[in-house]
Length: 195
Picture 1 (cartoon, rainbow, N blue to C red):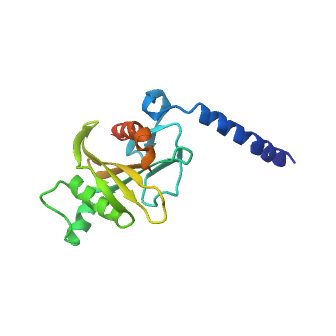
Picture 2: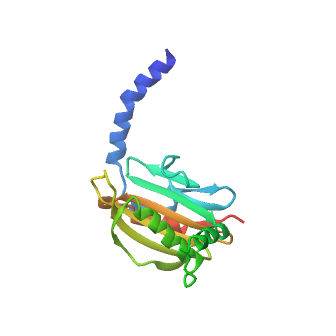
Picture 3: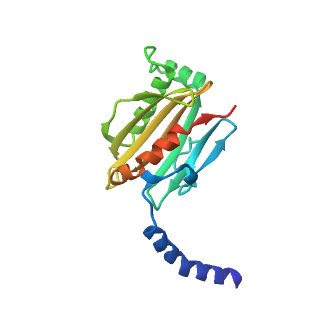
């Protein structure tokens, strides 16, 4: 009986709190550091996550980290691989380019994998940066996915660690791109290896 009463109360109050939340909704561009918390993954790396996102497991089976906000249409994952294993496999496939760094090879491989399930309409040139002392590249792309009416905007960051390469992928609907851009940048730039 108690659990039935809880369900009834939840059904009554959830829509009210949802409406209150949407009225008090703040633009992500004004987010401060107090609206993030840090998660550590496998004693390997840590990342700052916005408090509006919750952990999930259904975005990508390869991912070591997965967060989402269905309400805000914001999604985040990190995929990482051992550098040696990645290089060996891509050399065996004759798809490793010796003129590029391992991170750039990883970037190209990941974009090829993404293009199998999306139609990429626009992508920026990779921009080199340092994130907590690590070589990194960032880029954005807009794409269509079969069965999804709206265009999707992806924010990709590739990072070369000591033994691993990482891809931070954040995405949202294209019409929410500006709303989430600063938050996604803050997430990517918070990446840090755990000593």
